[in-house]
Image 1 (cartoon, rainbow, N blue to C red):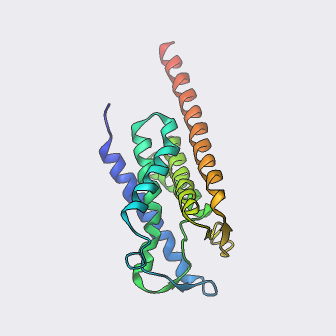
Image 2 (image 1 turned 90 degrees about the vertical axis):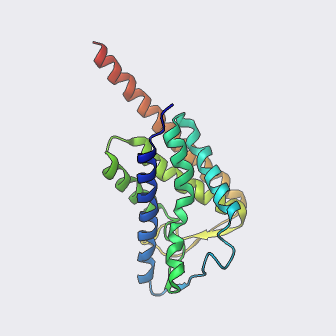
Length: 194
C-alpha cells in the first residue's frame, strides 16, 4: 500500500496555516476579545492532548478504508489547534476561532480548491476532523466554542455528554463522502470498460 507522503505533508501544512490565519481575525472582535493564555505555560498543550486528538480524528476517518484520509483525519484533528498560535503573541483576541462551523466550511473550500475540486474525501476529512477535535475537547470537560464566528461571536456552551454528537456527525460525514466517491469510481470504471 503506497502512502502519498508529499500530499499528506502539504495538506497538513495548509490546514494548519488556515487554522492559524483564521484565528488572527479574532484580534478585530473588540467587545469579545480577551487576553489569551499561552498554551505552553497553562498546560493545555501536552502529549496526551496531541495523541488523543489524533485518535479521535483517526476514528472518524477510518470508514474511508483509505490510508491517506485516515492519516489526514488524525493530523487535521490535532492541527485545528494551530489557532492557539495567536495566543503566543500575548495579545487580546477572540479565543478558539478555528473551533467554528465557519472555519470548517472555509477549510473545506480552500483544501478542495488547492488540491482539486474533485477530492470530496479531502473536503470531508477537513470538516470531520474539526468536529472530531471539538468532540474530544467536549469529552475532556464542559467547554465553550464560538461556533458561528465571525457572524455571532458569543461562545456556545457544551456539556461533556455532547461529545458523542460531534463524533457521530464526523463519522457520518465521512460515510456519506465515501459512498459518493465509491459510486463515482464504479461509474467511471463502467464507462472505461464499455
